[in-house]
Length: 325
Ligand SMILES: NC(=O)C1=CN([C@@H]2O[C@H](COP(=O)(O)OP(=O)(O)OC[C@H]3O[C@@H](n4cnc5c(N)ncnc54)[C@H](O)[C@@H]3O)[C@@H](O)[C@H]2O)C=CC1
Ligand SMILES: O=C(CO)COP(=O)(O)O
Image 1 (cartoon, rainbow, N blue to C red):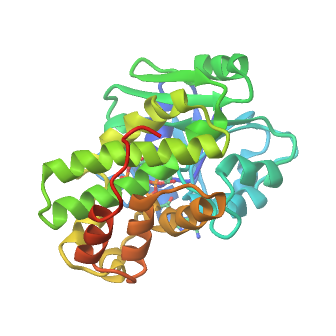
Image 2 (image 1 turned 30 degrees about the vertical axis):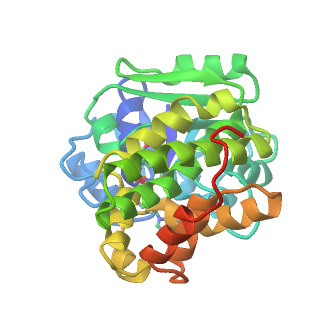
């Protein structure tokens, strides 16, 4: 049996994919979500329109996960430490971290947060281009699965691979995490460009120059550039910047159309992780001396410290430079 923590769209989609091979127990915070998964095999709140396998059962009690050896951990990034802190981790289950973000305040990646909450538990990171609704419907999805060694990642990949769900093993945990966290911020930037009518040239420029930022930041944090060029970096960047299925892209579009961040996020049950990641990323990059002008622009737009014309002006008037380096 596999456990899943968090029954948002991605936790539910992963549970449904895993149920093709093993029984799954999913923990949800919301009693209504547990009731609809157990009685109707559906999660209309977070993943409407998808019929779930009868092999997915749900609980609101984290203690029910005790004894399960493999957990997929899928709460929003800012809650991951707190949720793990309440979980029965005595048996040191393998934790596959699936949230994409950087912890506010501490600037820690999810594996650093989990290592403190679950000392001694083996850790892996699953990240890549994967809209939940598509994975849940069984459409082909490939992701990076990073663990401490490529051997551990490969063994884990054997366990969670399914006919249309294909994990690629890696030993670059930091690289897999940074790609997923940074692409959300860049998707907001692409959304702003589209919402403000700046055109497709601007979107492509943001993707390419954003990828340069992601790589600079990742390498500074110890990631390998080749990981950032893979599924969890460039792959997810292209997906998220290219589709209005992305919540981050849609948030950016609303900003580009003139809404404030508060207006664009009001009343939303679902998470646009880039909104939480952008200020943390801007701080962490400044602290590390890494130049990330697009991410910094997103952070200042979200904070209401600049308008779209002002950030455009700032970006376009930076000193001309060589493309590489
Ligand atoms: N939706 C997607 O297509 C994908 C999402 N992800 C990542 O998965 C993570 C979870 O996102 P989704 O499943 O999309 O969530 P969602 O946006 O569908 O649902 C929100 C989730 O946040 C949880 N939540 C709200 N307040 C909370 C609190 N105080 N403590 C703990 N949990 C709380 C809710 O229970 C719910 O599970 C994010 O880091 C996201 O970037 C990764 C790949 C694909
Ligand atoms: O991470 C995702 C796809 O890989 C989902 O993107 P959004 O959170 O922007 O919807």
